Length: 121
Image (cartoon, rainbow, N blue to C red):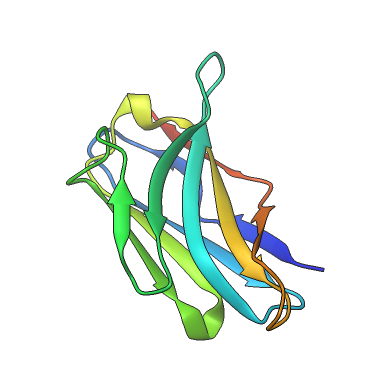
């Protein structure tokens, strides 16, 4: 019932900026943590940034000071502002959220299909 859809990926030059969006839809009571992961060919799947329902955040060391994660609970959405992009940031970025479908159920993880970010001259 729950779907996550990412948008905002594309081609940018090194040093440029990009803003990713992810909107959750379907039967949703509440959303706990919302996260951004990424994976490039030949590299491991890694957590880029995470944000709790209360707004607390965590970032991978490689993106600290450059990326900012935020959320809009009214819209069931999470965003990733990416500044000072580097070629090594090139990857498919995936949205992930822990969603409670009803008041009495535990949250379960849902994933988007991903959006490609390419950083190249």
